[in-house]
Length: 192
Image (cartoon, rainbow, N blue to C red; front, top):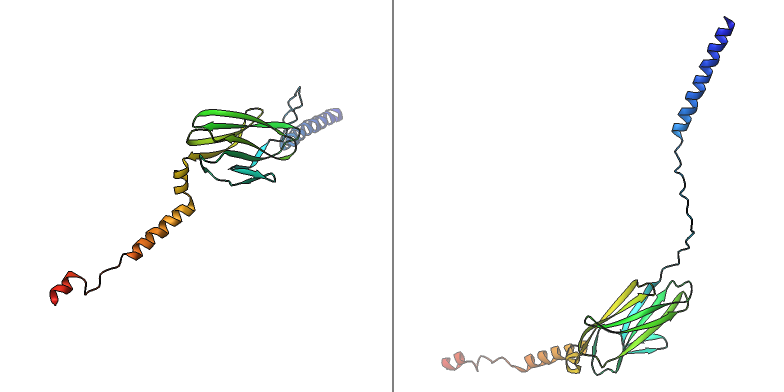
């Protein structure tokens, strides 16, 4: 009988141990198996466009005369860009458009993590709206700047100074028109 009791007790302990081990396993979060990869891909930092300007000149590597509307009597306009994030020497393209027609694509080297560069276009182009798109070697669009070329007379009429001068001229014209006094009005003449 002692053998039977010991055997029964041993069986109970084994079953209890198995049950306890299963409860602990259920409480632990399961780890997902790691996927095997055959290649290690080092991702390069992405280029970013920190600054873009359409302007009439570049002085000391900075844009001068930046704007969006230019007269056709300006000889050249420039697209100035500041590119960040290059780990190694790379390049970007300044792609010039007038309307939907591509006029030029200028490949420009980027030689450090922060690089200023520019391209220019002679204003022999037609009047209208244009843009310059900044595109990476891989064809990704970093950004764009839009501009408009107007006839010299049109552009001059729409400058802030010209608008202010026109408003002042209107005010001056309004001040020159004097209101008639009571003596000069027809009603005053009838009363006399």
